[in-house]
Length: 563
Image 1 (spheres, rainbow, N blue to C red):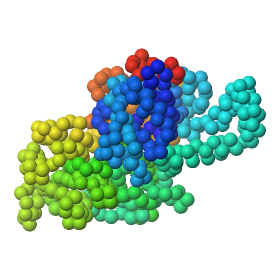
Image 2 (tube, helix red, strand yellow; image 1 turned 120 degrees about the horizontal axis):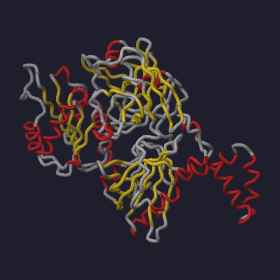
Image 3 (cartoon, helix red, strand yellow; image 1 turned 180 degrees about the horizontal axis):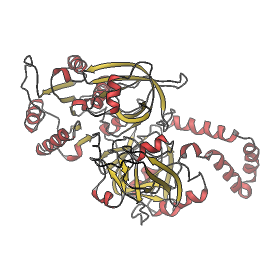
Image 4 (tube, rainbow, N blue to C red; image 1 turned 90 degrees about the vertical axis):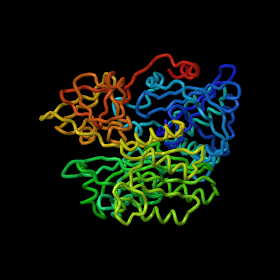
């Protein structure tokens, strides 16, 4: 839901009728508050109050996200209420505009299903993964449908539409102009949604932060590409670059503000092919591709409550962007909440963005609080050495007087985050206030096959591709090498975007990864960390987790219309 480029939101009135308002919007239109709560902003100037009117009588609501190129939709139903909470609304600000209200939805049921009506309409070729490129001209389809239905009921309208439809592209331009103008008036951004295809970029600078970490600035190769890199602080991009004849992909958090240059910070990992290449061999002028942005580790920027950020090592990367953006926004809007950073590192030389953080602490002494914990500091270090622990967090919180309504955002190694999470719970922090970002590279698989293995990709019963997976390569890597489009995002087994259903054969998965035991038992695998040990057959994401069961409360009208 957080990354869907197109959504359908339906609410239900007291007489069992539905108000369904399809709206295309950039990724991030739906906000995830916690593991079971979603929030949807009502844009400034939106004059369609039908959904709010319905919710005043019937609290049921449903959301459906359509993936272009497939007949699968992700659906969620639950109970919603209207909210004018200023903290929630300010966190939803878009292009400086704060929505006038929002819907908070408590999800009771979520699943994927097949929309047979979409299949019957033949909107796209389901045997291809091109999807978004094949989406038909929906404006033209709608205009022709109106003309056909008006032939008897409104002959004058039909007579007017007939010549307009006869000129190729004219109706599309007219309706697009009118729709885009209306969207802008309602507060929607006229800019494009998050790009679905890789963006060719070139390296403009490589700056060393520490002896094992560099910040890389990237700029689009094409001068005509408009505007800035658009992302929310805390999100990441996936880079693709060629190393010794192979294309490798990794995801790295954004560490700079929105601008025409994208800054990513990469820390060298001992066995990391990409991180070592970026640290040692990447140079100004080199070319690569980026995809994104992705991720929902996006702390609230506008609010009057404390924002507590806890990180260690390279976990500072997404937090640093949040700090810079939040300080600038809160200074502008006179927000009262502080930004508190508790950051752990080995020693002074390994504090990533150390000088920048100290400078921000001096510039914003009342808004930004910096607490450093060094496990092996130099003799010149004047504070008590030690890692972030229950004891150090208890001391920090007692001394700082953290706001009881603060939210907590953690990023670092798995061990560090497990420790911090347990410490926060012990200190009485409610779980709903704790948010984590885990991007641990999955470990290598032992006893991998020594010969290439064949993997067959299916869409339903249709075979769409056959891949040769070389030893040591994942299914996703083989697919991308062969220009076979499969969905993916993080590339390291943490997000689940590349999940598919294994029908035949054996696939080993590196761990840790994000799948539950039940999903693994049900035959779900991740192509980004999955390596076949025998010939295998998988069904791609358009058919995975087929749960075409009754949709339950809140879906009766929607399901009748679209199933």
